[in-house]
Image 1 (cartoon, rainbow, N blue to C red):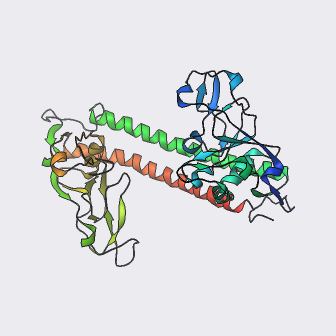
Image 2: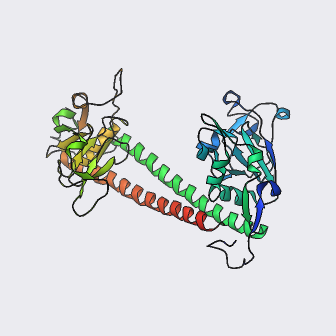
Image 3: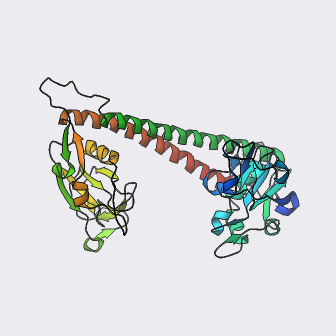
Length: 384
């Protein structure tokens, strides 16, 4: 009845209660997608937004509506809302506390009103109680969660003062996580705008001599050798890296596409891979020797092409694929695209400059992961 982690001033045991003993339940009222108006008079929350937009605490409202207020169900500050239907059991176990009064609550929302701290309750339900809530839900193709089921949920609760302190503490951490996400998003947008200016030749990285002819148009097929990834069953591989299996195996994907590790490698370092399926045209410089599978396109650049510059200009290129089946980018298709290429010295300067953005994004993403792991640890240990 005592959590593993606790503020030192609190010593009382937590008390066992059923959710139905500390709360009253009601339902929201239907607000369809067509009822949403960005200039609407009344802020509103639709149940689908709990899956895609909101987290444990709702302070800023995404949507608005012009539905007559007399036909709406309006929130009171501290209300906790949980979807009443969803696609999977685990998804439906999603709780959020609404900090504002007067927000219209859409249909398919269970509304929980309590004198306990709603923010504390949302964090608690989303962590320690998530699996229990999921097991309460019913259905196959569509999963339903009823207030009568939620009322039976067993809770262990501290006094209100401790709830308030926990809620404030977790909200501060969550606010820092949101700030970190905004930092990363702003950096990505800034890099995107700079890349656009570079490849439109609005930013210069080279003092052009009078004899310099400028950026030269080339087909991608002219800037290196192209290969397609082979079959996985031809490789001896392991999913995890060890002393023998040290060379990464890459497949198509929007991130690094890491599949596993091999004893031998097929391609040298500083090649560029391009995703031929899924996220078509996504390029990556591979900084170590590697293997490629499932038709991942591999480019070994010529000596006068900087690999990082090539990665960036391919990612900037809009590949239009006409296909009646599964869309895919092939070597003949990508080879025929034209790009503009400056001299190697300017390529190197551009590559170095854009790499500094990537290094900064790596550091900020690593910091975000640390915050998110800290939140998971705290949610696991601050509740009973």
